[in-house]
Image (cartoon, rainbow, N blue to C red; front, side, top):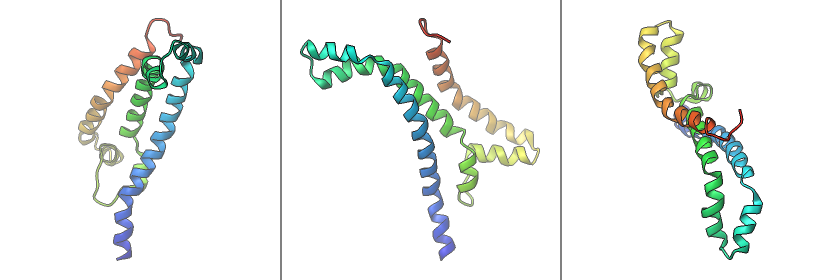
Length: 142
């Protein structure tokens, strides 16, 4: 009974571990994105009679939006390709893309690992493309 209880807690623990890692990545991206939005523009909008909520949506969100999208893409990529916490905390019998790829790759079964690798690449391609477009915008410095 005790062993069953521990096994039942593992999916929740894996979810919490993934959320903690994702929050840390998201926090850095959101903080950097909001720091790039000049406070003086918010003050100007407030001085023109706009309410705080209107300033948030019309000024701050528009300035921080691309950075927030980039932060979301980074969080998504890190969650999809997370392997370390998954290998440590995954319940018996559960499978993810990363663990299946790891299992076949560690057994040198590259032909069987290839479809899982392809799916991970296809899933990561969209956010990677968005990040590439974000960092290649005119006016950004490398």
